[in-house]
Image (cartoon, rainbow, N blue to C red; front, side):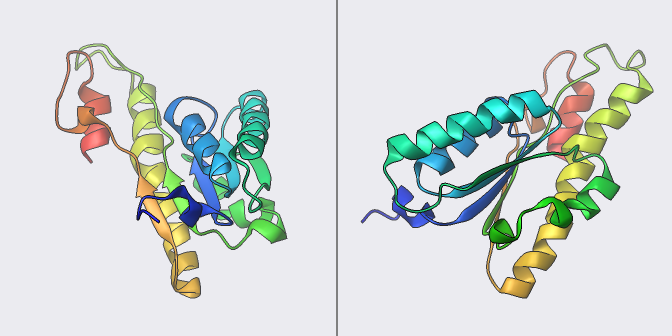
Length: 175
């Protein structure tokens, strides 16, 4: 067996933030195909329902006898009180989370510096930086109690390679 074998993920429980689209969606589907249980977190309920259906299909295609439990939870990672209440929303059979994937993030405020709305700056830092930190804080406690767990933080090349109109986004990805 290769050290990169997806069979090591069978039966693991994974929580993916920003799971409604893009890299988060693709990540959730790959974990489902590998036989993991997947908890999907994002702000958009309708999109989460579609990703949950895709996870069910991917799990069946993957042929694993493990995993197959999927839960979607509407949550904005920039809302600390919602994060603090997250455990109450996770079904009991999925509370032993093995892997946190911090993926949630977005870009607003492509205007030049000086013209970017404060609300865009607050929203990006709230999600891209503080949301990641808040989720990590919560899960580090959980992982210490279990003496097990992994955190995957997704970033962006924009954190080291700035681009025109991306000053705030690049700053959040560098943070």
